[in-house]
Image 1 (cartoon, rainbow, N blue to C red):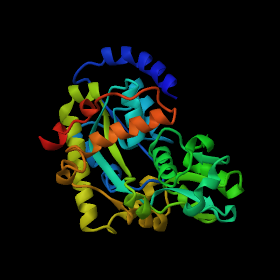
Image 2: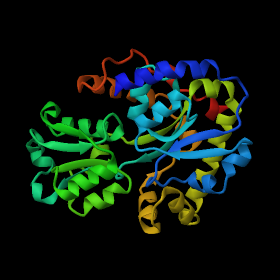
Image 3: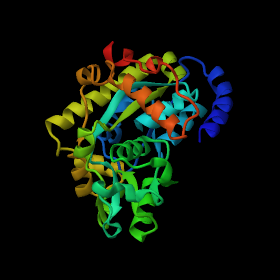
Image 4: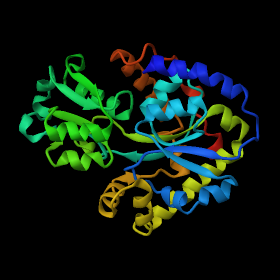
Length: 325
């Protein structure tokens, strides 16, 4: 995956050099289906378009690594709710991206589900060794899986990880192809029909395994169009604030934008939190917490063989300017 990204980086270099400042007639934003977020009210109402003064196209992706590659190639300028791990892997490999905000914090919506008939729990998790586990590779779900295995004393090198996006992982688990599958979003509802979490979100948080997605930008685009990025974050913050004040007011719009039925979307939203600008600038987040987490993620990805080497410092890839100005 990292080698493929490097090829995309080479191909995208010419696009960046030819990208003139101010020549923006459209902004394309990457997002996930079956992942309802408060800002989707502004997406549906075209509040972003009106505030930014340009059409905003929302393009769905299957995982965060695809978002990175789309930004590197110039097809996407902003990624909303990109996984933290794909971002870290991307910038480590040379992708010219910056994190400019926290999109959503969550715990119970990114889990590993064990089939009930597998007989595996957190107490005997070592029985996963020698077995196949379906998971998206190189994203936050993958990172959480590795950290969970570490906490439970499982040798991750003895577990066969099979690359599958959430929808496919759910199918594999339900069909019995794997004893455990890891996923996020709506796929978890289908997976829970045949199993239970290896560790709940609350148990993971107690073990220091935090879960959040970010807002990232293509750096050249942001450097040349700072007002567009700032406005995007302002609209997002306003949408988050409105949702916090009246969580049920616009759930139908959010569900529609996420491609979900109303009740599953409402249930998922109830387990999400959307940090305020003040919170995002605090020590736990972009005031230092995520920078430290980036180094930890990168080092763990190197240990697991999914990244050649980590950088010494990840501070340059976090930019609070658009939030604080």
